[in-house]
Length: 131
Image 1 (tube, one colour):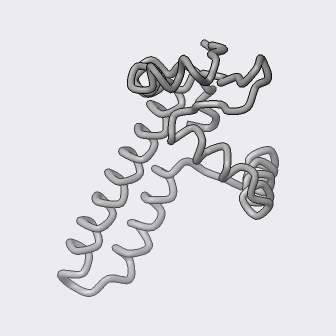
Image 2 (spheres, helix red, strand yellow):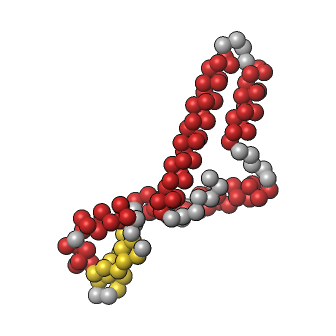
């Protein structure tokens, strides 16, 4: 929800404004003499927004979306399984067990990262995208 607030009121109630931004994911547009001069966002959302303004990031996202449309991608689970198969076929004794551990750790990391991204998107009200 977006709230318009005179900057003098925001200054008096700064702690409450910040708390509402962080806890309730509310937005505040601060006004001076009725003119919007400042917007308050949660830090994560601001960082996401600023990152998306980077031309390199935009190109990487466009390329990724193009790859998805062309079917050039595959689920992480398939990638991990094929990597595991190749490792098992070429591994010396003992190496396969270490690779299994590394693949399990990578898989757990991937699942945690996806979960964090999903929850971040849910908190901010943005769609979850490919996750």
